[in-house]
Image (cartoon, rainbow, N blue to C red; front, side, top):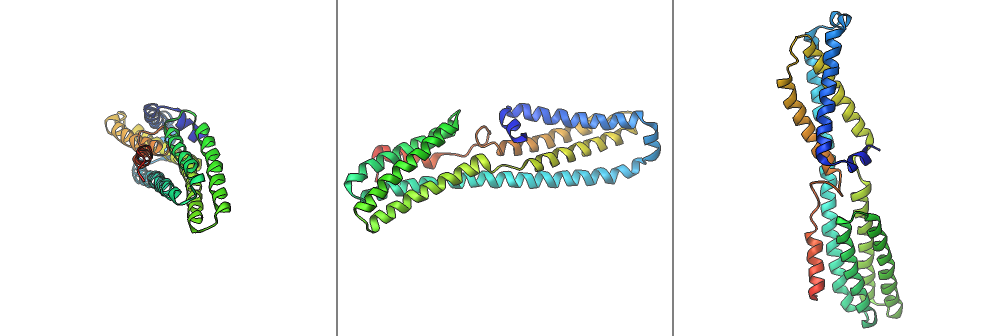
Length: 260
């Protein structure tokens, strides 16, 4: 649910929402401290300083951990695009060594496959492109299987291996791009620790009359910016940081020009 909410909102709305929520958490702590006299009697301001430091440290560690997950997923997506482009290019070249009866059809299907993969990146309904990709898998497999049955040799075996690699990499890209996301439990933990941190800072601010927003707001903006960056890296389809498709575009161009 959390992931789907992040995916559906513009990135600036996410940033502003995080800022507002952290500011509200601070205000809640401030109001608790200002209006509950019994609370003030039980809590010493000096004990809050190390508590705040510890919470900020935990929050910083969790942000770094989450950022590491997001960048790792982003790097995997980049790597799989390159690997898929190489696999398709290899399969296109190897199509020259199978029987000419199947060669033309295999090359045409590979061209369609590259076009489909590139369209999926900007498609508003990626499921349609994924379905078409799977359909092309079956067509390609049917052609190379027929070639192998008609003329079983090393050449057709290499062609089958190439098509198998393409199918495997499709599943890797789908997994990395659509399914391999930061778990909801981590987002909920991050939200909870952020709330506790800002509330505790607000409580400490309540022991003095001024809120001290001049010092708090820059921290809120910084933490919100880093959290928003993590959210953006975790949104493969809508993020500002998108995986480049230059390797696939190069393969497409080579096919269109007939480069072998």
